[in-house]
Length: 292
Image 1: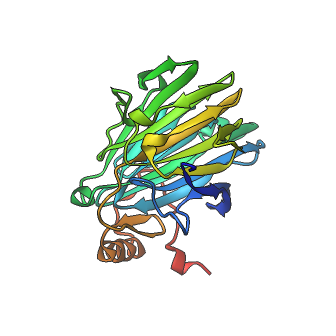
Image 2: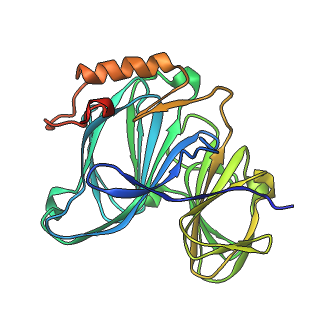
Image 3: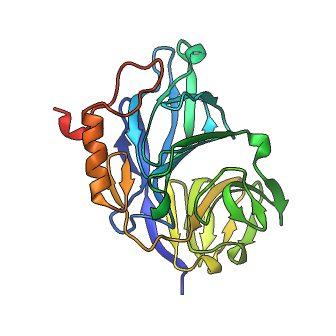
């Protein structure tokens, strides 16, 4: 019996002036463990007059994780954070009761040709922490646990697995792993995983139960403990998952909550522009229902 429960293909989505491939949520699978949203950005080649510009917008009830393969993004938020994220680093922003942030091409790249490629991920917060104070952490690539195991290079970007722990301050049991191989390698890591689990193929291919799967797909496992597959040569995959929450999560725009009343409150607060602003920013993304 196959351990693959569901296959999700990337679907195009527009996040302003930038197209992405949306992976989660999906109509048949809204979340994987605490992971509620995943966008694959790019790879996009931008000319000297094209830039990423996502104006200030709010979040509640989640943590965002930005992980780039190519390019750079300036992150600014209502806590006063002003950080450029580069490939291999992790931006981890916890919205809790509410935070506002913008994402833009850094000033020093705005008049040059450039690439942008990466993942943007939302991780829902446990019910008891949905209204916690907002936080922001930036983690350098050199601080992320990395090792080689049976011919496969592994990084633990967030969470805990393999007896290791990432410095990214997560708030529920989860894992977000990168696996890379330059040669064909069999992988059996189920004993190191838990909860719900999914695998995203960035490049190359994997083989499982006699079937070959290629990029831009998420494979949802029936049982994380049976996570076994073969990496083809020059393949990179990301494995994410963890313990699911007992309560349902509702998503409206950039708001995630176990109680719809929290979302309604956040909507009204954004309509009134009473969230704490991002220093130095004057524009903002309107609530979707206001758009013409």
